[in-house]
Image (tube, rainbow, N blue to C red):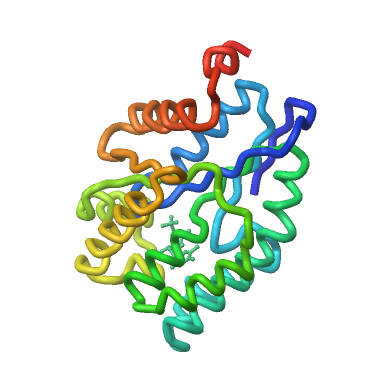
Length: 228
Ligand code: TYD
């Protein structure tokens, strides 16, 4: 979790989440967006899930090591929910209250895509966990990075080097194709919150698309902010 400060708090901050399959470039794009918002003198906090708070980082270790898989998809969903509950209460909600813009690498849509669509966990459990962990704290904007699965997995393999794939990177091609479809459906089902961004270009081009989406949705007078 990294925070930058440049502006006095004024009102609630904005909550922006980044979603997408493996190797879609979420962390690169979050860094680029944070730089741009900082240049516009907005205070930002970059965080991630699973994790983002001391308690949630412990849960992260549990799920990504594959231990959650042994318990089955429902229990794994509860582990992600427990991590999210801690992260929201101790990090995200307090930051937003202070006027900080929170940029989060993955959030509740990851549970819906990975555990719901791919793990076949029923919507009733996903929705119940969502009510408990995030309540009314819906993201103001969700950027979903979309990329052909083969390209994403190649990028993830390069990033990993000689290390072993984690719990989800190790799933087969069909799983990752299903994941891409699940994210496209999430974007189509909630167009007021989600923007599907074509991530199959160089990082600066994709960053330009993300910035345009953000300006359209959250910065009604972009020129004044860019030149601030
Ligand atoms: P991470 O190393 O952060 O990967 P990535 O760069 O792809 O974000 O690993 C997080 C993994 O956890 C990723 O494969 C998605 C998965 N995940 C879920 O299955 N459910 C969730 O609710 C969250 C937040 C993540």
